Structures are given as C-alpha cells and as structure tokens.
Length: 330
Ligand SMILES: [Zn+2]
Image 1 (cartoon, rainbow, N blue to C red):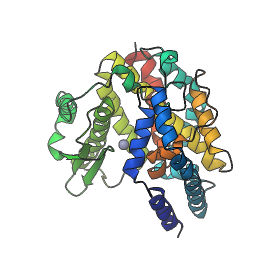
Image 2: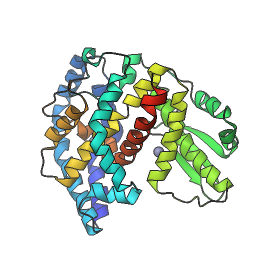
Image 3: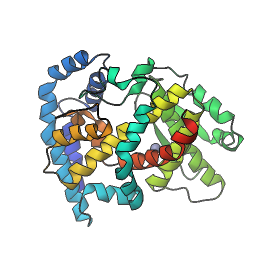
C-alpha cells in the first residue's frame, strides 16, 4: 500500500530529530533578528538540513505514485481536486501571484530594502517581526470581537476552548451534537496566533450554524470550509489597526510561495528543488535574488499537509484582490 509507505517516510523524516525540533529550528533560522544570526544557526545545522533533502524528494515521488494509482498525473492536481479547489481559480492564482505579492509588499508600512532578512534565503515573509511582535490577549480579544456580532455571538455557547501545547490551532467537531472545540496554543499570543484563532472560529461557527439550520454538517470539502474560515479571519483583521492589517495581508505570501514551489516539484520532480524554491521567492519581489535555497526541508507544513496550501493561496489571492486595495488598505 502506497499510503503506508508515505506514513513510514514521514515517520523517518522526524528521526533522529523530532517534528518539534525541526519546527523550532525553522523558526529560529527564519525569525532571528539579524541575517548574521540566521546564517550562524543555519551553518551549525547544515549537515542535518542537507540530509533531509533526499527524504523530502522521496516523499514527493511516493505521493505522486499515490496520485497515479488514483488516476491523476501528480499529487498537486490530485489534492486540488480532492479538496474541491476550482480549476479556474488555480489558473487565476498563478496568473496574478507575482503582481499581487508586489502590491501587498508595496502597501507595507516599512521599506523592504532596509530589512536585513527580506532579500536573503531566510525570508519567511514574517513581517510581524518588523512591528516588534505585537501581543494579543487570547482567547479574550477574539471572543470579544465575536460578541459584538449578534449573528455570530449566538453560536458561541456551542464552542469550547481547549488550551494545548501545539503551535498549530485545530478544531474538533461533534457532528451529532453540533458542537465544536477549538484547540489553541496556550504558550503563544502573537498576531499570527490571534489570526489562527479567528480562523478556527470561522470553521467552528460555520459548522455550528449549519447544524442549527438543519444542514449537512459532516466532513465538508476543504475549499468551501476554508473559504468561510478565511473570510472570518479577514473580518477580524479589518477591525485591527492599519499597520497590523497590512502586515498580516502580506503574510499570505508565505502560502503563495508554498504553492508556486509545490506545483513545480510535483509536476516535474526531476527539477532541482533548491533552485526552484529560490526562484519561487524571486517571483515575489525584484529585491529578492536567491540562487539556491534548501529551507523548504524544514517547513513541516509541506511534510504534514502537502499541497494543502493551494486552498489558502487561491482563497487569499481571491479575497485580497477583491477587498484589499479598495476597502481594507489605505
Ligand atoms: Zn482552516
């Protein structure tokens, strides 16, 4: 069975170092206060990072085999179809990814050419760092926002909040009772975490509302479900200060890069992944001139949720080009 093989490959990817180690290393490299610090941490771990490349490629090949066994050419197309992402929306995303990214970057309240990491290989589009890492009171600030909206507030009593130690926010559903539990990271309170919480509330409210209205609630297709969640995330964002909004909107470029990269490597696994990942960053801004970048191997989202970024890239690019340059920004 192909999927068992994938399971084993993912398992061995996190050996000898765990997923948490890998995630922390990625964060430390891409979020250090200077390029020199990033470089230092990278150099110290270079052998480990290079050692992951062949494991990463094997995963890509095996996932493509799985897609082929299901009648698809490659895993990228397979997941897009499975998740229900409209084909034309994907074409539109690729057509405007570069232009939209440059617009989002132009809107930022600071000069990118003066940001040390911006043009380097350690660019993770985490502009929150430039705002001095603003802190949020969670879950309070998101819950207070919902309480102001009567059409959403009425579903709050069906949603439980569960503090956990995991940087990825998730929602569990009880489809029989029409209830949801949001698992949120109790150790972090960054802008990124506030947005993740608003996003999960978007999922949870959607399901609880469907139940209350007698609609089908079990396992929705990811694309429409994610669209609802991102819409609510952007509603929350629209109520924040302009600088915060602009920084968060530019943060969606992170997903654009994932998608530009994954489309290329799954459709043609014989390309040089390091080179493709570098070029993918170069598409985003003329200030970025990377030649070779192996840091994709440290991005656990690409390991755990391969090609899931397509959902976010399509949704953010669609919604941000609809709203961002007319209403929200300015
Ligand atoms: Zn989601």
